Amino acid sequence: MTTIHVNLHIRRIILALSIIGAAGLSLPASAIDLSVTELFDPAIAVIPDIDGSGIMYQDFREGKYKFISRDLTATEEVIRDNGPAYMHPFDFGGNLLAWIEYKTTYGGMSKRGIDTPVPADGDYYVKVLEVSGGSETHATSDVGYKECIAADGIDVVWTDYRHYSASDTTIELYYYDGGSESRLTNQQGYKAAPMVRDNAMVWQDYRNATSNQSNADIFYATLPGVQEEEICTEGSYQAQPCLYGDIIVWQDYRNADGGDNADIYMYDRSSNDVTEVCTDASYQAHPKVYGDYIVWHDYRNVSGSDPENADIYLYEISTQDEQEVTTKAGYQAPPYLYGNNIVWYDYEDGKVYRAEIGGTSARQASWPSVGARRNAPQPDAIYDFRGRKLKRMRAKGLVLMKNPAGTVKRRLIREAQNLWNLE
Ligand SMILES: [Ca+2]
Ligand SMILES: [Ca+2]
Image 1 (cartoon, helix red, strand yellow):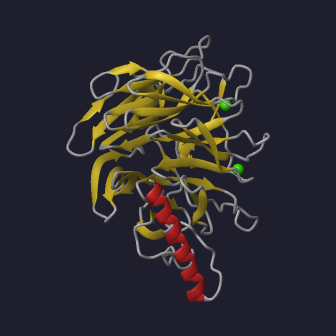
Image 2 (cartoon, rainbow, N blue to C red; image 1 turned 120 degrees about the vertical axis):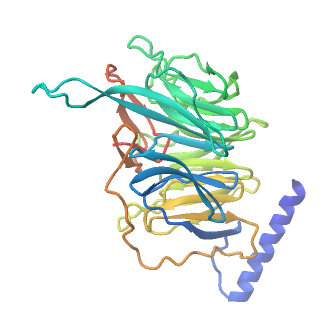
Image 3 (cartoon, helix red, strand yellow; image 1 turned 30 degrees about the vertical axis):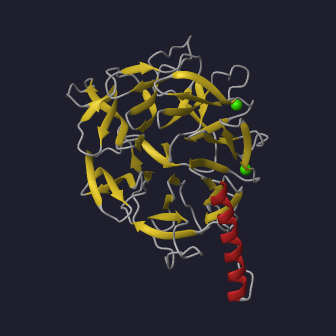
């Protein structure tokens, strides 16, 4: 590892000198090689979840929502026809696609005595599909309310309300290993935003939110459910954890002072070190970690003339270097990261982009020529499997939401796991 880092530093010095020498002026010196290319042009705003060399997303084609798998050379495969419903949430990892599906049931009679179908509260399914040649299965026979899902390898984890009652605020994580399900956590409070990789997981946990309802923390466990570890129990709100080996990153409000100044923090289980990855005074969110790199969604360039100017930034753990991935005008959605590939959806032109870290001869980012802003064809609204309208996540970090089970009046403070949230 040491040798590699030294070589990187030398390469940067050489590159920086060559740029100054060739151009005769001081271009912004970016430390990390990036090559940005346009990947594809979906019909709707998509969540490009990348794992391995594949991107999994839902697009709208021929009047239906479909799960589509696409590799980085643009070969695509329709994985599943979802019909009229957008599956939300879903997750993809290691050949495994998992999502939560709501079965609408119909009941009741209209006052006129006509048998009019009236949507009634129905069943929630956790569905699992092996992308390459597997069959679709159910992870659990319980059909109570569920939300948040993570999948990787054989592991599927979701948030489950089956133990919840007015007197017991336990909302637990459950686990499916391809054969049977088990209960992972057994603590009071809400558990959310699970993320699974290589038989380990991190999640957001409200067990310590007794005196401060917004005190969410970050926890870790190996799978299937061995020995929980506290990763961050600082007294404010922590959210959106992501895991790679011993490195865990998350969004952290400890410096927010009641405002929107969320930051990015990192914990190394091998050294017990906590690192401030980004404490810029604006809003940072949705960190992803893989290998030596962390990417996140960053609002530092929001201005009065471009109030939705969310961008994407990159951090190299070994050097503590930070740099821009894109600072293009308008709203670029939260990034996804796997290997040396960063992918994101750009609301400005309705396309999905990829930034490749290193590995190319071009030092400067080869920014695609997108020309003038165009009005990309976007649906007026996207609906989930339950027919609920979804909205794009905005800068506001905390979302107040009632338990959709209906009987519970208590409001939960949380941040949505995904790009899309209920409107
Ligand atoms: Ca906390
Ligand atoms: Ca900040």
